[in-house]
Amino acid sequence: MEIWNFTPNLFADCRSSILSIAEDQPEEYWEDKHFLMDLPRKWDFSFVVMNERQPVGYAILSTPEAGRLHLHHFMASPSSRGSGLGSQMLEEVVTRGKNSACRMITLKVARSSERSQKFYLKRGFSVMDQLCSDDYLFLQREIA
Image 1: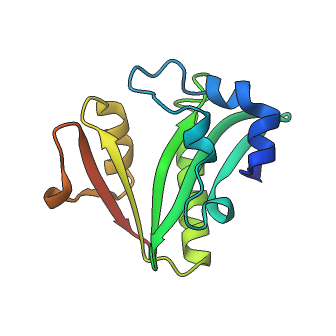
Image 2: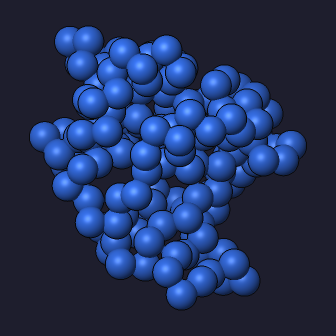
Image 3: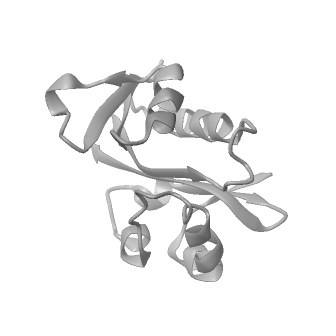
């Protein structure tokens, strides 16, 4: 497995494979415009996990404010789920945050996705009660 920086060119070259990673998820709504949206330092932080030159996971990240890394989209392919890839990817997110002096990682997770909630809570995230909505929980984790 290799970690490649997510770029517009990589997305163009691997578009169908990247989009297929999450196609089995009922709450999935990301389209080309979401992957290509320009966000603060997105192209510095986001990455794709490649296995034999094929995408098997990705993390789309940005820094909406100094010291905070926001995880917009995080997905492993169906065949990779449960293999530890998600944990490895999350460690890469943490490493990228640490290397850029970020102190916190934030994200939102669908209330309907208990599996995703368990994944993040088990890995040190906590619910930001004041920001919860009817559809999403907002989570945060300090970077040590």
